Amino acid sequence: MKKKFSEDPLNLINFITQEYKYNCKLNFLIQKYPMEKIASEIVKQIKIENSNLIDVMTFARDFYIGSDLTKTAKNKYYIELKKQKFFEELNKYLYSKKISISSYTIYTFGKFSRKENSKYLETAYLKKFKNENSILSYRALSELEWLKSKKVKKFINELKSEKSFSSKLTLIYLYEVTSNKIEIEKILKDKDFQILINPNSKSIFTSESISKKLFQFENYFFKTQKKNSNLINFEKLALKFLRKIKF
Image (cartoon, rainbow, N blue to C red; front, top):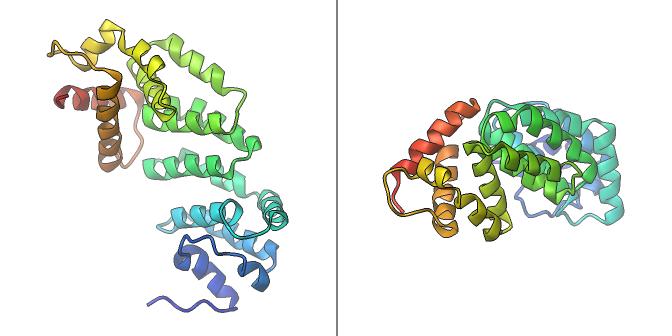
């Protein structure tokens, strides 16, 4: 049974890592603890890669975005996070070997909704994601679009120029986020791409059918691939999955 939350400072850690109910009712904390203390404990916990890491990320995000704090209190909290190098610590998990950790870190940077944090996702995309798999690549690009990164358009144009299998998958996934069927159909008009993903059928993938199959593959990817590998292995896995299933 979980301990009841009290004013004991040790229980602040328990609340952050275990007891938070994701309801964003968090204003009571600043009545008990200085903002510096709350930020400090979050930073301490974010440095520890364990089973509570995603819970800590969620709490840190909710305290700023969805909580019942005033706008002034939220700004004070964000300033404290920056001062105590929270985002530098969070950035390390973009490079985690664990796919689930990398993915949730991408999402966390996006949810903070601060354009200045684009630099972390931009660098990780170039150094890591685009060289490993289309799933984390499109997720990073999607958050960069949300953050209004000045570099995201360049990244997308580069993918269009590459014309590789993985670059096309990244673009389709990205266009799915905004339901941009026109751009998806442009990719699917490529006969070589159709043959590559569906070599033994006279039917072709449409924007509707590829959407369903890529959603299935994304779920399969996260269930079966616990660690990041390389782009060659990712392409083999994707092709094997897409060629196997019927549509």
